[in-house]
Length: 499
Image 1 (cartoon, rainbow, N blue to C red):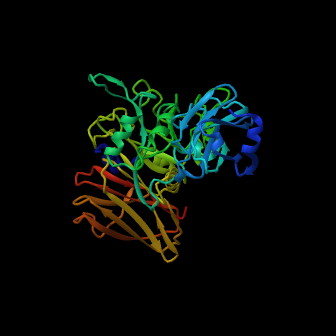
Image 2 (tube, rainbow, N blue to C red):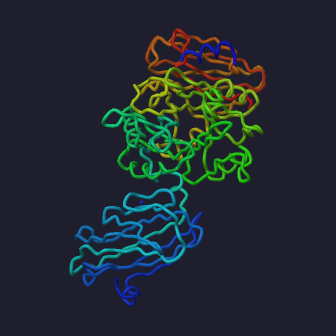
């Protein structure tokens, strides 16, 4: 790490069989990536105040089923309650208040029980709570097996459909590992997921990732809470904790064996490939953190070394110990210098959601700010993969850092690539908001500061420019914002030149 970088970091889910045959029809279809069963039928007044048992088959090897239920004549006060039984036990009943729910091995929609999904004859139990004499209600139930989105997210809808910058915390811990908070008597106890989620909502965050150590048990609580927090997106996550480094896995609820050094997971490269096969995004956590007894396994030092082609992101700023940040700049910049392009992200690594705002390691400090097409799990992770990210170290709600590079052949933003021939002039434009009296710095390859037309920000919304003459070689250029003492406030991802 350069001396200049050192300065920056240091400051900082019974009716007879003959009647059933008339009541419904089942048919199977093939759809991409999963099987689907459709149950259809009608309900009449003769079935009022009875239960209609609708069987369906679940094949072997299924780990999750999701049901979408529709029926007609709601406006005429038709009400059907919904229960589910697997071949051996009751799995839940939501009454009439849920038309969509999922039941998985590790988590389920509230009203339903998670657990193993046995093959065989399952039963949808429809309770006819009310139907009028003149009404014939039609119902239709779609049953999905292993629908990918239900393993990747806690909602299949965007919380916000607009394109823009979204602010989040990608590293947090709760009672499902070693997160704690004061109970009613003031004693520290394992902290419920709700407390951390509420703290994030109060901070005005748009998304969070509860990344408990090697755990996926938090997914059940998050699936329950997501409808309540309808402006705060929960991204499935866990911190894969090995003896030679930690890595956060985002975007999957499936089990991933974390036991590096065993026959099934001999090294980190095998783990990373398995994470990729699950559709997850793996990010190295606090790579330059202390190791040994100070922080067991925290420092990133796997043997053999990981293939960085398998690592889409690096946690370059970690909330640290509450007194200061753990920087990963040196590790990250080494990867950039070797031609890799992992996205720089941040994470508070919060273990105490009651900590004061903006203190390093408090909820949202640092904040990862992602430019995404919408506020959804796929869009946020796509934005991270693309490098459309900057880090707001102290978790403001409004600071903005954007950079674009352009030449005669095109234009590129943070995380994008630009081709620039030798002697080609490359114009760099840095847009900053709400950083009055701070300093903008643009670094070439992490070392050389480029001269700017207005490095000191004298207004709340300014665009700073400079021109750099390309030598036709590979480079990376990033922008950052410091206060006047040199302490880092905002860190952008690079624009890549000739990569």
